[in-house]
Image (tube, rainbow, N blue to C red; front, side, top):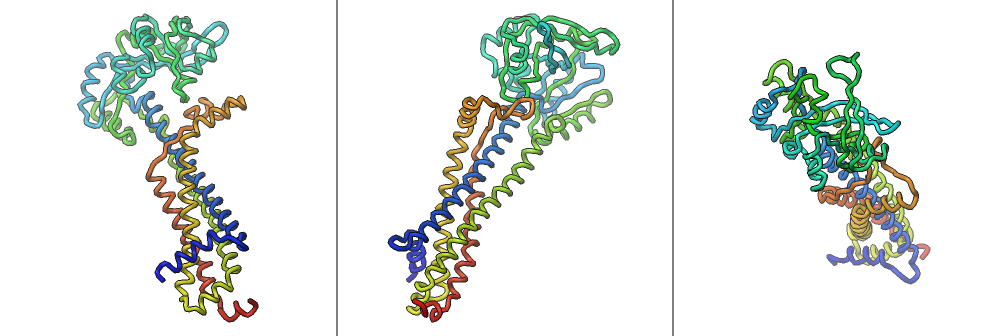
Length: 410
């Protein structure tokens, strides 16, 4: 008798003969739950993917933090050695940053021009890893190298080896004519992020001509231990350095993206959980239909000695079995869709000729996905808990069925 409720509850799910309606309603409930759980897993995986790309890709290219001086840094090596003594700072590298126009023929596009020491830069970012050996050699040997973002190069229809003109405002005199120089395109950098449409990279030596004083740099790019404490780390270092220095971190330049991702994950998770809850209304409806259809069976079981708890157990087992099957299949389907999402989107874009994510609007140009076991566990617990609570009312109603009244018309 210990397995009585389990046996009868499972039998009601897989009944045959003249009770196809019950099986149909149970199947419909499972399908609804599968779709809801799969969508929840898929959406959470996409949000996780955006968060991963922000930390690994975007923050691997842009500086996590910077320190500058109002007059530029001449003896930057001394400052580099000083800030690297800070336990919260992993490494530092010099850089020059200018706003520039890149001209080719009659076309000109704005860009953020960054000058860097490629050997020192490898300690604070992974830009060098995106270049092949030929491109690295060309960058290091050319007197005026230029690496352009892929979208930037495409707008100007530039290939490797092309010469372009850079127009940089005069920093020492705003009313003076802008400075002009010609650079050689040595590489096109494709990061699949917003940087592809705005970033131009050259060497520090080549960009010295745009600095007010020789042998100066704009500041130091920093890599910190805790990226979410980058602003606090910069502030503490500035207090130690004294007046004349100022700094910033990615939390000010790209922190809104991180905040939006975290907020979206909470909001979307809540909305998709509501979809799962709506799907569980099918479970309630199917169980209520089963109770109405099985009134005679319930009455017979009661007259044979089945207790109220046994009757409730039958329908709790049935509802939980539906919830378990729907949750497990939904999680599996969600994982499969998440793993193939990038290829699916690429295929749809190729067939339709449309680009869903553009670098000038979104931080990445594709839909990333990352499956986290903690999310799968949370989704499973939520769906199973909802399934259990969804069974309580139909089970309670079944247990209250009066045997005499139910058998009167049988």
